[in-house]
Image (cartoon, rainbow, N blue to C red; front, top):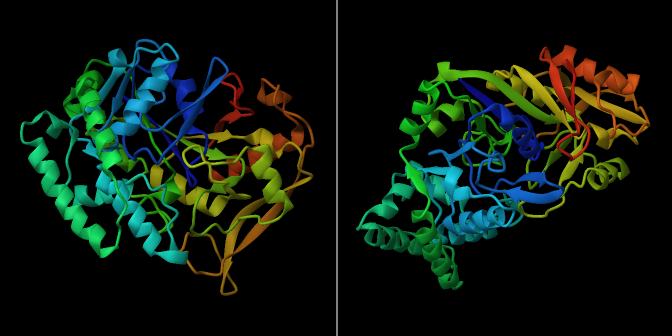
Length: 421
């Protein structure tokens, strides 16, 4: 049996804490897509740590953590990440497994990412410049190198062939930076990667399922950044939705049971792209400061706005969400009024669907106003003890989305999670 936890907005919904909370109920925690452009923030014994590629179950004893084939892996970042985990007393070598089919991010992928983004000028996507998109391009172009390839004697030859191809692309961009330091680190990372447990991921995870072990699939980024269904072209390069679990781990659809969708009580976005409910005012700044809305991978300030139920309904539909988890509800504590976007107005027509193309479109959110509760909720332990106006806000989401909000996070701490039903 496989359950899934994924984001329903533009990423940064607080999935790391949620996976960490639920991990105790599972034997296997598996990442199924994305790369080191994702950052899952956890607080372990009061210490903050950000995981980029390692599954968020690594801090639980005797849990199997699998990096699936759908992930693009940067061995340099993985090495540093493992060192950070080890510094907190965790023996990652025992419980971390990596699919041999996961594709590698090369130094030249990072260079192409940087050169490509710079060439776009004002039309930048907002890339994290980690080489994610070029790595996925080589995957779909059938040129990529995979983790299993590093165990082959011909790897160096394969690497040089691909690097030469990349260098021709970089010449077209007039990219002249010296990446020799990146390359040196890369090969150090490969030696480190060889020391880890590399497995045939699809057989590995299906064997665990066959044994009756419970699997938690962990997504990165958010549904509105999905390469097919997100706000294209301002999206990531992988399928962030529940369908990506099957292709990213090698499991059949009927193995999936619960799909837990994570949404903030408001909405944020990092980088460029459409954001109909964005607030470029004092309220947006208050949400940013109160919610500490700065990218866990890049440190960039996040754009902040009201919750968007048009987008949220869409994300719930394409994912088949069975339960909702609301994070950062406490960030709204100090607001006098709240807004909820129920529909969009485009060309004087009110619509309830996500348009095919949102970029460059004049979208006016149609809001419903709610009274704020003006009470500190960070110490509340039960749904019944939440302010009545807060419960009204949450119940409205229940009724509108037709999916129950089962958990409410009211602070960064692992104990700050209220069971709603």
